[in-house]
Image 1 (spheres, protein in one colour):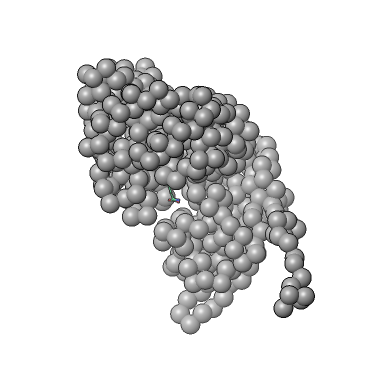
Image 2 (cartoon, protein in one colour):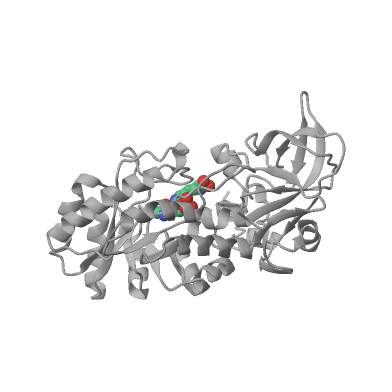
Amino acid sequence: MDYFLRKRGKLYCESIYLGELADKYGTPLYVYSLKTLVRHFKVASRAFGKIRHSIFYSVKANSNLTLLGVIAELGGGCDIVSLGEYLTARKAGVKRIIFSGVGKKRQEIEMVLKNGLDFFGVESENELNVIEEVAIRLNKPAPISLRINPDIDPGTHKYIATGLKKEKFGIPIGQAVDIYKEISNRKYLKAVGISMHLGSQIESVSPFVEGLLKLKQIFCKLSEQNIFLKHIDLGGGWAVPFAKGQHLPEPADYVREMVPYLKGLEAEVIVEPGRSLIGNAGVLVTKITYLKKGYRKIYAIVDAGMNDFIRSALYGKEHRIEPTILKKGKTLNVDVVGPVCESSDTFAKNVELTPIKEGDLLCLFTAGAYGFSMSSNYNSRLKTAEVLVAGDNDFLIRERETYKDLWRKQKLIKTRDIL
Ligand code: LLP
């Protein structure tokens, strides 16, 4: 459910025609719908009913300050994986923080512990030792939650499956109880929770239920041994529909199906959704630079590239693409490609589009998550602008980069003398 709708063939974000935003801010352009983001958050939260819970939005999906500010306003916390994400979330006013990630550096651990967090999602015993050392030095006990690898197949793309035995993520489930017991003897480590994260774009609820049952088992075993945890963290990974009419659980459905297994649990339930909150709240608007006839096909060469949106090149994921204005007439079969010098800079192959010409706008859907946040300056291209729409208001929430930005951190050293 989102608020990108057509009126008389023209594609609107809430009450604003996307073409109007492209004229005002240029292309390529990320456009987000505030109403969609808020709705996704609220329906997920409401689905918990009376169950004590918190939503920690996963910042990696989209770390725009304004969007994080919206999450904060809604009462959400943030799941972060770097000091950069921590500082960004704090700057946006986010109060509650979980620090996840397999490779937290000592300096990051120190800064985050010093400035406060809900807990570290701990990935190994060695990491636990580093956290303890830092906690002792700061004389500040560290709240921790072990991220368990429950060895569950989430049935998703292999690059984004994380809860299987063969992955680098999480602590083997058989070691969990012993590590918690060990922690209970350490003054500067406070076990407050147990966590998992199975992967991303998990299209059915059953892996979550399976994982939850495994975590609950450990939770109960620990209670029997007088180790009481306050949180049970089920991670993120809820899927979003990429195509019209694709029926997948909505954020609220994931919650609803887990609720029966959460009842009676004396812990706050935590979830860390990213994509399901912001994915369908954002689109990428791009302009056709050329229509090019190749040997066998026609290419719509657009002004967005894999540097702006890498999901298609990296995971082979074709997102829905449509013209911002649907015209009547013979459809055209095209490959939508970017200008970057790589064959993988292809957004979609053999797309049947209503009549288009050079200069027309295309909209790539479900671009709110892992879109801008994975963008780069490859080919010395400027990072795009981002706009937030709220009803009939639009706000520039990130300026387009300028050429000067490309060189801002570089030094031009004249090597003539040392050659
Ligand atoms: N929590 C943890 C510990 C995570 O590692 C992730 C995502 C999330 C929560 C949020 O997952 P979500 O609800 O967004 O699925 N770049 C890939 C996705 C990578 C996800 C990494 N971890 C993509 O574009 O599909």
